Image (cartoon, rainbow, N blue to C red):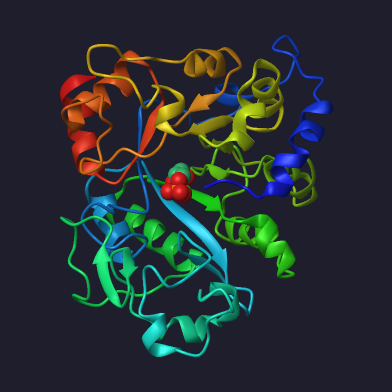
Length: 351
Ligand code: G3P
Ligand code: CA
């Protein structure tokens, strides 16, 4: 989740150029996003509570469950294709060890960037797992079983075509929510992933603030580069979301000055849920932060992650209570969830 140590060192540089204040006359956030709507159900890696993350099946299920936006985490292959995977490693969601046993790097990991798309097509994708010596065990025990059925890796373009096809056949207008993963790593591998992602977006008609897309990234320097350089050079403008984690490298972005700086290039933030309610809260004493209020004061949309029925924080007893706290009490503008159906039902019944 966090960006590299280089970014930690550079964070003060990022802030040193901050000249934006809340009073500056810039069009940001909700004011810039033409199709802004509240409260959004964002399918996190698809309906990943039910089917292996980032598979076409999980995306189709999320669509059918009524998600407003469907998320794509994006990485690149050796031959420059943008594919939909959460990690730039393959070994925790595929059978790459069996198919290409000699292709691990010295650290024992199998990197997407070392494989062509045609090689990735040979892999079977499964639920996320961890290795305990030679044994695989599922990260989420009660989800889709390991090693069952048949799933593969999709390109970003293929996934957009799925959403467009479903929009045509259903008459709905579901959006996409791509995340650029590890831009610094890709740069070291001589790939400009941001440029590649923007080219796919433009090819499929996502190039204005009216289009149903949010582009997200954890790396503030990359998101600022996209805003300041890449989008203007490509004559594009799409809503940008700055992701925020709980690590120390994000602290400079969470100060008043840091958030103002974010508001100069982004339209929203995607914070960990624990930046809004502190994780050591208890049911009888929730410790809320002022992050949502401050972000809204700057015109920033707030879409926290990740809402999972099977991974609840200690301060709630069930999933509906979690949704109630964030969507109603804390007034966030949408949530990333592995369970789009439960979130749609909650919103229809309660808000
Ligand atoms: O992008 C929002 C959320 O998905 C961030 O977490 O690690 O699941 O990409 P991650
Ligand atoms: Ca993501």
